Length: 341
Image 1 (cartoon, rainbow, N blue to C red):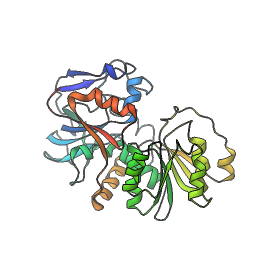
Image 2: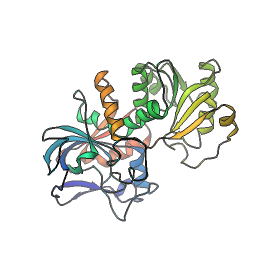
Image 3: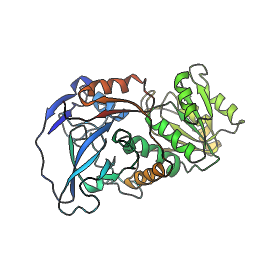
């Protein structure tokens, strides 16, 4: 079986094509022919050595894949040959409250991942995908789509008429924009690029803020909400943006922390603004398979097409990583897995 492996901490240049032995199916396992893999910032962190991995040595990277079931093992009940599926980020978190046990296993860090021509996985780690999505689009559901869903509707509890603030135009933020507009939510988007802001406008963004031109962008957020602030902020920046995100939230508002792109995950914040404003913060650790199924249901009902910035051929895997690292993308970066390594 052809695949890629990467050495955690070895950088993008350590990504190498390899051939691995084919594994027989065990009880309740499914063999999936992988058609597409979607990259996340987490994959860059694995390459950099800043994301915890289990074991030592090289690992097949990636957590997000879509493909076709080509073989089912004994005891499999949820899928049959020919079904179109996507991976669940946490194969053992089916539904309910998150626990250490449910999140102990992840693909591409806590074991081998999905950047390969096929994947053997327990049927519980897969979810059906909407019929109208291509494999490249379906591969974006696993992490970015579910994270946006969880932040908006599970932890965030937003409803029609609320206002949310989205930082940047990466995979999670663009997914959140599409989902929020489908739910009748007012959306404010920030970016350093006017071109990207115009693309966000085309997807329905109501207020656009260029944070290069308006460094104190929280003031623009308050101005756009008549001083009241937003109901929810999807915080992806980290130490460089968290204080402004808190200031942008209204009384009783929420800040959903989903990443630390701007300056890592270590930060110090003044708690007074949270206490006085009755605000709250919650960490979003992707979500359950049930959330992914709920997401897919809405995507099917509203005929939502996820935004894919660029699709790379499988032999361009390093270039795909580099494109993601550049920050020039709008939406998701995807690798099309074909029999060429």
